[in-house]
Length: 183
Image (cartoon, rainbow, N blue to C red; front, side):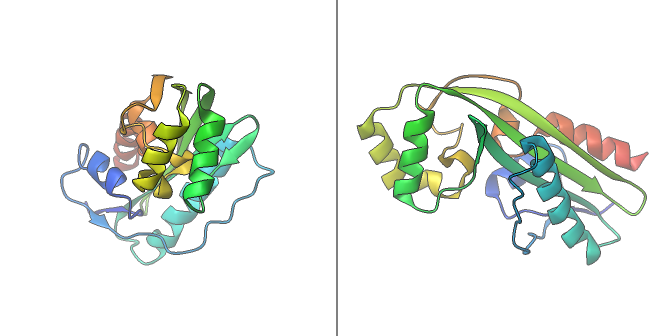
């Protein structure tokens, strides 16, 4: 079976390699259309499905895996920051507080299409202005939903749920879905 990851994320690629040894990376290119009227779980799933379907159109002989991660805080979806000052403002808002990370997953082949999500509760440490400046100046938060990576030290105090979900690919869920589409 041929597998394709519909994402350019190096973190997703690394996590998927824990499940599947050989796969191709074919990033979806269509613009992500965010519908803020949707519940965040539904939106993450819709975005993952959109990416998966786009890549599947030109690779119908493969099993395609699409993911999308959103950060949900106080009724608002926090996407990737526009720039360093936007990242700093997001980190300041999340400092010492709790939010949710939701990753939608779509796994599709010519026989089946499955859509699901994983949700993790994340509590931040209290972040000083100096820490936020050093972190944002380093550039790490600029390509991440919520302006941070759980794998970057000093940010997350604790989490409840899947660590790999927060990184961007919930390994246990994806493994289960891949096994289900094989049946």
